[in-house]
Amino acid sequence: MITKVANDRQGIQSVEVGFSLLRVIAANNRPMMLRDIAKGAGMPAAKAHRYMVSFMRIGIVEQDPATGRYDLGAYALDLGLSGLGRLDPVRLSGPFLDSLCEEIDETVALAVWGNHGATIVRIVDAGGPVTITLRAGTVLSLYRSATGRAFAAFFRSPYLKQLLDQELKLAAEEQKISITNLRRQYERTLIEARTHGLARTTGSLTPGINGFSAPVFDHTGNMVGAITSLGAMGDFNVDWDSAAAKAMRETAKALSSRLGYGSMPK
Image 1: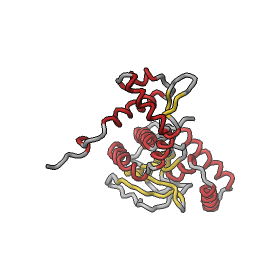
Image 2: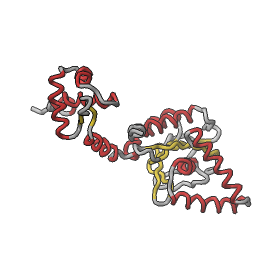
Image 3: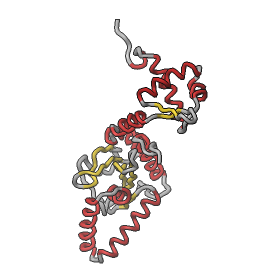
Image 4: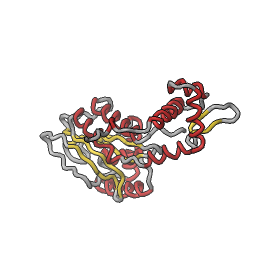
């Protein structure tokens, strides 16, 4: 006889019951009286108390001796941080990118900060009539690309500043304008990106191609990636309030939430 797996696997019911108490405490974000915890978990207070004693012994719950209220303990925080630290934005981004590509019908990608700058690591091709030459491993310009601008606006790194200074110097020479004026123009694009929650380009990286790029953050509040979308200028609307812009922001927010962004107390 073959034993079913997944939901039909036999487990330890007492562990599942105990964790229902922890869920109640976690959901309330504040210390609680035993009767309220037990009520939230749907069990008698006497039964809940036995679980709380065991949880206190291992440090996952603590009790305030003055008020008698219970809260999550130091070990619960350690477990949470350990779990958050294991979350991989590249691995987790797949379903988010697939849904975004289907929603806006444009090629989308994920970039992370690599040894040489903003680097594409994952792509979902919409398969449109316009070929976009983008592949995993491509390092994008901080000055000309939406992805690079997103990193310049939201990512903090001494190396980024060094790379950007080099790019701006070369661009100023090519355009025959002062580095001061070019830097001022570029800073305005970064302010714009921070205001709207994503960066954009209109044909500045590849002629005829528009782009959006939205930052992705982890549980520490640091930028760990950028979701980018690219499409033909005639079809891809890059207005700040366009459907694509809204979808980009929502997808980046959802992936950030999956990575624990906003979960840590301030």
